[in-house]
Each structure stands twice: as structure tokens, then as C-alpha cells.
Amino acid sequence: MILYGSSMSPFVRKVLAFAAEQDTELELKPMGIGSTDPDFLRASPLRKMPALIDGDYTLADSSAIVHYLDALKPEAKLIPTEPRARGRAIWFDEWGDTILCALAGKMFFNRIVAPRFLGRDGDLGAADTAEHEELPAVLDYLDTAIPASGFLVEDRLTLADLAVASPFANLGHLGLDLSRWPRAKAYAEAILARPSFAGLVAREQAFFARVAAPTAAA
Image 1 (cartoon, rainbow, N blue to C red):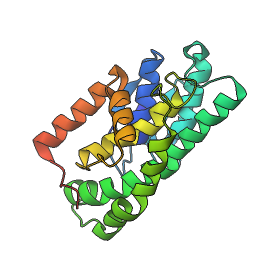
Image 2 (image 1 turned 135 degrees about the vertical axis):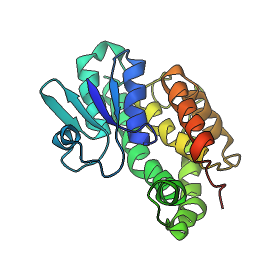
Image 3 (image 1 turned 30 degrees about the vertical axis):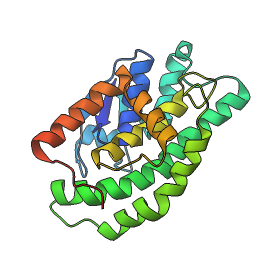
Image 4 (image 1 turned 45 degrees about the vertical axis):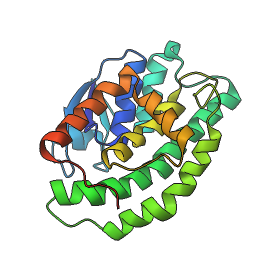
């Protein structure tokens, strides 16, 4: 199976971590914004990453891909089968993708991607609004939602944790101070320290150290 995208994307990172946790081998084919690679475009009609090719089968969208991987290897049990736990896991997957990733994306794109990789000014006003006016309430919620076990659902690692922790890597690349949210900070650090994430994040950090050290948070 080939996955198109960049692990700098929290959506791609989520899929890679999910596959690693269930011991499924994916070949990552690096893909940047605006790619015209014909195989990528065939797999992702909206031109968004990640996209998957598995033989003659193509699929786009990180949540669709992880559900496909889960169906191929249900014994990994990364998506709960008990109805209420399954509902919570899917809720946190959606929350991570549409709420936390969206805010991290506003900051990451405008402060790093646009000026350093696309050669244009980012919307720093939008990034500042995301950090100072929108992100605090989101992290306030997460700080109170994490059980004592350190896992969001069923007191074990599930898709919920992979989806919610992934955008924290981007917040880390931005150099944000998250000490106001100690439970959320410790939770994310613990999940990102797992082997499924740690190598990806370390390579991203090394890349920034070489060519694109992130601008400190405003």
C-alpha cells in the first residue's frame, strides 16, 4: 500500500501512526501542496492529502483510510466495537480533525508553510486569532476530558488518541507554550512518544533544524 502525503500534515501523520500501531506496512510517497502526480490525483480527486493506493483500490481522507485499515486488520482493535466506546472514538477523531487540526493548521500554515515553503506572506492575523482567541477554549475542554488512564476511550490506545495527539506535533513545531494546560500537554507528549509517532516527529524536527526553524509563537 502506498500513502501519498507529508507527515508534516497531522492527517497524514495520523494514518501513519495508525498503520504502525496495527503493524501494517505503508510506503509513504512524499507529496507537497499542489502536486500534479497523476497517481496522487487519481487517488485524491480533491487534491488533498493523504491519499491511499492499494493495488487497484484508491481512497482519500484520513478517517476513511483508517477505517479501511481497521477493516483489513480488526484484530488490532484500534477502533472500539462496543457501541458507546466506538461512538466516543469516532467523536474524538472528528474533533481532532475538524477542530484541533483546523486551529493548528491556521498557525502552522501562516507562520511556517506560506512564508518558508511557498514564498508568500502568511495571514499572521488569522494565526494570532487562532492561538489567542480560539485555541484556549479547545484545550480547556481537552484538559478536563482526559481520563486518569491517559487514554481517551476504554482506558487504552485507540484511534481517538492518535487523532487528537497528531496535531500537537504541529503545535510543538510552532514552539507554543502549553503549560497552561498541563493534563493536555502531558497527554499529548505521552502519545507522541510512542514508537508509532516518535520517529516521524523526530524526522520533522530534524528537518526544521536544517532548513526551516519555526518562528516562535507571537
